[in-house]
Image (cartoon, rainbow, N blue to C red; front, top):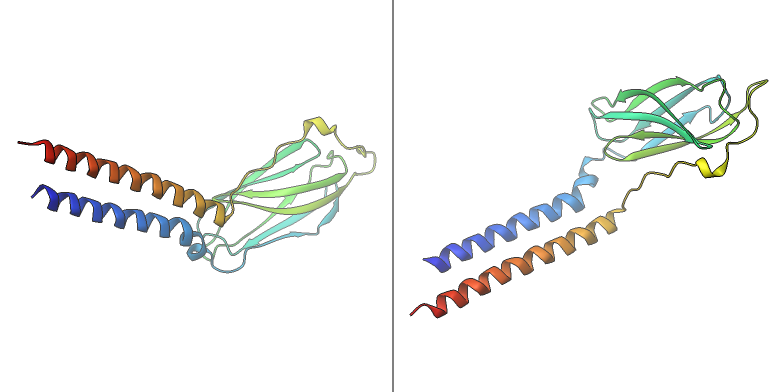
Length: 177
């Protein structure tokens, strides 16, 4: 009876591990509705101009935080929500006092999407770039192969744990008079 319960427990554990592995490896590909596209239009502006940020091919009905990052500056814009097709378009005004330089729009949700923007200083604005020591670290994301490797390591650790528990139960059963 005890060995039957142990065998069932092991088979359920293996099934759950396999399902978790498939979810982590294949889940992101299943959620994507196509190729992810990030378009910043226009890609070069003068500080104070309006910019349109359009994203397609991401998870639907998800809030995204929109920020502009560069030159040691982070500017947060209103949050947007993707529609039922996994797209959104929003217009934002680049602050008129923004120093000239290269910036990056980030749409932060379940992953961080980026689009580049070149800003020219407005007349009478700050043309010089901010000091380099004020730079903001970029967000970190892992590639699918890296995530798959981490999942495999986790599965191996769980499998080893199950084997140790089974071994301990078998030894305990052998020691019973």
